[in-house]
Length: 473
Image 1 (cartoon, rainbow, N blue to C red):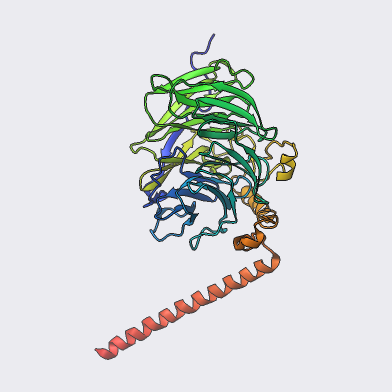
Image 2 (cartoon, rainbow, N blue to C red):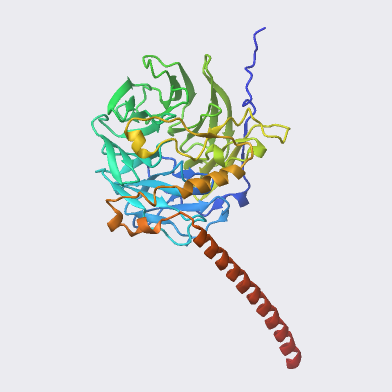
């Protein structure tokens, strides 16, 4: 008997927007007309590009700081032009990179508990683009390697540890680059360009491995991402301006494996991919829905699962890494949807009755430890992501991050070149020593005793006021 309905554990995935008190309110989201997601999330912070007068800025909020955000809340504000893209470092949850219209890339170190004052001194400034920088993406498995793409049609791969541009790809794209994506182990990149072509590039050999002209006939922007099996997923427009989703085999880009018509709307579809479950989420700019599809090995390869629909259109979208999800609630994805004045978390859940850890929903996922050092990658080595289990929820993740911060090289190897000119480099030293921990303990004790003193004095004052009022009568 042939099954009429395809079996899948993700068939009943449902999305749910969190209540108002768990949203981030009163944020002036950027109005820049650039097709980036404007939001980046990791297990500690949510970063949102905002409107800023006289330069570019973005907010970095600890995840728990929900509710109304004060207008005077500190921002990250070192750029002289609007910020176009931001991306958290996958190997250190306190490091974020930003690209801006001022044609620079900056890397920032966020304090452990978030910002207490505005941050205008980056750890390192990367200068090499001649026009605005619209795409920023970290290497998935090698420490301190950052890729940036600008409107000068160049892709530059930086070693952030030394502040140098190591690889510059400047003659491969004749027009504006729409998207760049690393593959699973970071040995190849896939780009989509305004000349209606997608290219697979080996950045270290500086050569194009595969190229496809007009994967989508329409003139509007395309997006291309690598899947974990090496296939490529693209979103774009047909000649009739219908939005499409297509799957390609990298070895043979002649014909797509499958093409799905999505709908007729004019917002660019931003794809977010989960390599552990092989589910792709499509969020259109200006849409009020998130569509999700499961990718399988058998035809028709792309299976529509469902659509999450809300009332408000989205200005941008942040996507939480697997390490930041609540595994006890069978949460398989979490989005941070940007409205005009707020950021609203949306949780995707697989309905399960059991409270136990669901192994089939959470295979081992990429952890925060890098597989390679920057130098090893530039020398030609490849490394698959180092996987961790999510079985105990958040607990092991926190310990791992602590270790990563401890041996983060942004503090000890940063820029021999820029060290003398960059005071922020010396300031950003996240290595906790026993001495400083003891000092912190001492300060905390002192704060506690001061609090006790204040509250006892308060009680005394109230008592005296009562006595005074009796005398006055």
